[in-house]
Length: 140
Length: 133
Image (cartoon, rainbow over all chains, first blue to last red; front, side):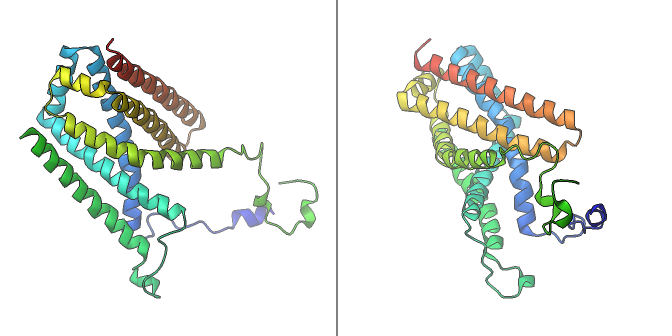
């Protein structure tokens, strides 16, 4: 019995696979999730500053409105929209949807899961642009 | 590998859980991750829209906006759900990449403590604003 266990084949690891969009969307989902966890700290900071008083709030808005602050906020907003789009995709896949192959040939890689991956990527970029145009509209 | 009658068992030995066996908690984690995700679709979109409309307002207006009952309610719901979801997600990441068992356990527990503490702090801050304290 012990012999059988040791000779079992290992599943192929990252180095063997050709990069596919589904791998990218899966890894980026994790990365944006970690980034958003850090972003939650900033949300907490903002709420505590708002409760504490005017000077604490101004210290927060000064940081958030600085060049570095805005660069980080653009990153966090894209992370949120990406995690949202790809998260909805994963929820649908959990329900068993979105696994159909358009072509019989798997090598052509035209499954619904490929197109929904691209949809999550493009959708998140579009939503980020819409959000920042709205920000510009509110502030202008 | 030994369990009663394993010599005649035709099933794969991996069918039987080793050591203490399954904790029966795996599905609970998976399910709560999905339920909080579904809630965060709505709460996350509400949060983004609210923050954008917040922008450019002075301190008093920002406080008054958050103090509105539904805004305060949804903000607490958003923060608590988001911390819960984040804690579940970070736990999986730690379990996958931290291979020293005691590092893994310490990190998972630390992340959970932090999430609860910060969710409480953020909720109390919202309540202070809502009740004008």
